[in-house]
Structure formats: structure tokens, C-alpha cells
Length: 347
Image (cartoon, rainbow, N blue to C red):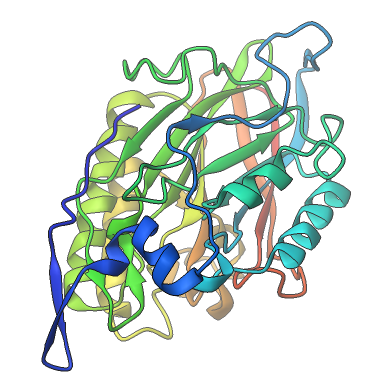
């Protein structure tokens, strides 16, 4: 896994007072803001699911079918730093368990206690989600990448940290740029935001490259510039390592092209990204018009920070989208999940 150490020797001027970046360091933030919050252990941590091709694990041999994918920012910072409570997070997991989606792409899975709930098979069972990813939990000066996936479809985790970008395994890459906006409430450089990708075996001879990402959260001009660089970095990776593959990409992009002071800039960023990668935003298939440009997506989607995209590129299997919706999970996170249903079949 590619880890880029953040430069934390920064300071901000707030109301004319130079404040050391106490809040850039989770250990210090814990003692200052949270009192009894325990800083997460460092390193790559796993959840409890089946290993790739483990005896007893599900296998898939059919030649057509459907699957659904959700992207869900679970608001997993410590409550004292603005995240949801443990009771809300338990309710969130209960909804995931009962919904039994096929692929769940989660963002902001940051804290140790919430990760322990995710590992509890009485809350998230192997029957519902047999395969789960590992993720980078951060160091003493960061919260990690917060990216976790749950899946019905196997993907190889055996060489999680090989960093060879062969895409024979699960890969992770951190975005090269970030920007802190303390006045605006954004502390992006406290995390290793980036993206992960795994090759999910939908059936014996058809796999989909499934990406999960979380981008810069701020709204200032500096944040817009950072997001442009992050879109470019993601596009470069997709074009280098997913050439000829069908793709599903979900995540929290923080790039609304409606209800936003930078909506024109974000629409241009999205259009450039789609043109560069050949991906489509899911909402483009449901504009109700012959003009499927992203400007014609429904307002609720244009004004949503979370998105699902896809690309049909496999030579032998077709991938199409059947439906797309924003679910109602009753506010157990500050985001609601986006759900796309895909059909696939042998050409």
C-alpha cells in the first residue's frame, strides 16, 4: 500500500492568533477535545470475512445476473470530533445487515471502537457479507484512509500491501495533495484520503474493477484546486491499470455541481474526468431526456456529494445499469447511501 506521510508542521492564524496545529494530531486532539477518546492503533487492519477462495466461501458460476452497489459515508469520526455516536453506528450496521447489499463501499471508517463493531459477526454476518477489505488505520498523527468494503463477490486480499499495482490484488493509493480549512471545518490532511480498488469476481470468467474513494472536503478555492488534482490522479490510475476492464466507482467526491458556490468548476471537473476515463455517472442513465449530459441529472443527484459511476468495457460480458436511488437510512449518518443496481450477461 502506498502511504505518503503528511506534513503536519503547519500552523493556522485564527482571529489573529497563531495556533499550533494541535488539531492536526489525533493524539493531541483526543486529549484536548475528546478527553477519554482512545487513539486508534496504527497499521493495516482487517475485518472478519472469508479469505479469497477459502473453503466454504461462496463461488459464482452463472452467466448472467444482477448485483447492487451502495456508496455510504458512515460518518465514522469520533463523536467528539463531529462523527456519529456508537449507538447510531450500531443502528447503521443493523440496516446494512438487514439490507444485505451485494457490494458496500464505505468511507470515514476511522475509529477503533466503530471498527470493532464492524468486526462483530453478530452485527455484520458472513452470510450477508462474506468478503471484507482491510484498510489503513493511520498512524499516531493521522486517522487513516477510512475506506472499507463489504462484498458478496470474492477479491484477493492475500497480498494487500504488495504495492505492485498489478490489480491481481486489492490496491490502495493515497492522494498526493490535501488542504486543511480549519475555519470551514475541514481537516483533510489529518487523514490519508485516497482510493482503493479490487478485482471482484462476478463469475468465473467475468470480473469488475470496483473503486472506492473519498476526496477533499473543503469548499474554498484551494480545496477546488486540490480536488482537480485528485480527479486527475484517479483518472491516471484508472487509465493505467483498468484498461479494457468494466468498472464500478463509488465514493464521497465532495464535488456537487448544484447548490454549490463552485458548481460551474465542479461540473467542468466531472466532464473532464468522464471524458478522460470513459466512465458514466449513474444519474446520466435516468435523465428522462435524449440529452444525457450531467447537467440534466436530477437536482438531488447534482446536489449530492456521493456518487456511483460505471463503465462497460469487458469483451465477453455486458454491464448495464437498471436503477439508481438515494436511500433513506433515517439519518444514522450525516450522509444517506446511494444505491445502483447493475445487470450483467454474456455477450
